[in-house]
Image (cartoon, rainbow, N blue to C red):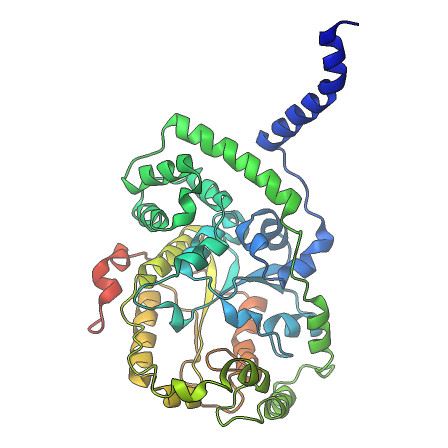
Length: 416
């Protein structure tokens, strides 16, 4: 036997396997998602799922509804939307998209893989006032929720529109996009107001196929499983849904959970985060300002995408803990101005489904901690979420205004 034949017998199978794998990665063949992972994935808030497409697409093609937000979605007490939907067998299941650190820019790019799945459907979106700081989204937080799959999914169809040019310019400010210089160059092409070349599109599409196969194979690994936590929370609820009875239960649970501090903050949060240093925080938020931020234009990206997808969205504006804000000096006047500004941006463009809870931060057991909804807060929100998702709504009519991408709007602090 010749040397070539012997080498082929030794190395041939490995070469064939590598070639087959490469062909698999670059072909558009799509693997089917195991439906059994969806209930766990819907409440996991795992970064891999947020950054991918496959599991989100599979769930949102069924009876799951995207609930977009950040850290407030992680507070899973018995009145959390996912718990109420499961306990009372509602025709929808929340699919939680976002966790601590996810803001508008992260959500815009995460939406790119589910545009078809949310088109002409409903979404719930929680707006956190704390996103709207002077610097906007933290670059490290953005990197945590970003993937090149998001970028190439967007680039496949991106035209140099005002929306896409703004998205491209913002993405180029983030170090994570420069991990692949060919993707970064394509993003820069859109930022410059040009369409991608044939060569760039070819690379983007091949990269999309490769990253999509990886997503289908690996996105469910290391998933944060919280199904037992949901089941445990649901057991605390009565068999029949009654707002009056549930509100009484929420009062009772809230009272038991907030007994060791004067701010009606959960004992667990207080002991872990504030007990040893809260005295140092007195008056420390007096200069906080949520009225001037690049986040306003990042938020406009999300609105623009919802309008293009003709998605019917229920926006939620949560409050802050009133007792805590008074202690730290956080300006109630500034918060009221933020409320007016963000509602102007929404309503002037036809986004009229708004649950404004901003004035409820002083209600007993409404908040679980300093800025996150708790027992009675979730229950009040449910009074808007349930009819929005279970009843037919008028088709929205949106009027996107490119003014909201401007630095003038980002920094405007009155007269709007």
